[in-house]
Image (cartoon, rainbow, N blue to C red; front, side, top):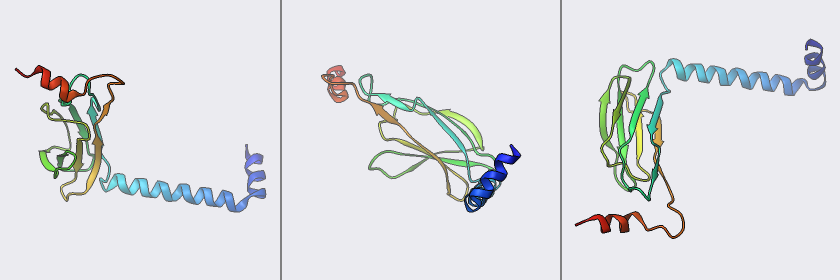
Length: 142
């Protein structure tokens, strides 16, 4: 293995140094983000809506923001301003009401308002010939 590295370094010294330098820079940036609390884990389940079943669903939201005293969780819908949904501990989970639609986003921020993570719910097409969800809803109304 050592001879292969010497051989590669001998043939392409600039490439080897560039790759090592890039790796070091990425490691420093990643470490800095982690220790400053600039990252969070955010899951939304389900993250896709079956438009044939219902245009609105409730989702389970889980989050973990290491190195944060607390977080704020916002929701946004296409064409509407973001709204504060929860202020919570840095780790938790909650279930929304049945108001999540295609294009709804869940955003987690630190106390200063910096975005740590974002997830957007998308929809799955019903397929050709299937009725549009609004048509299904209209049929279901008394």
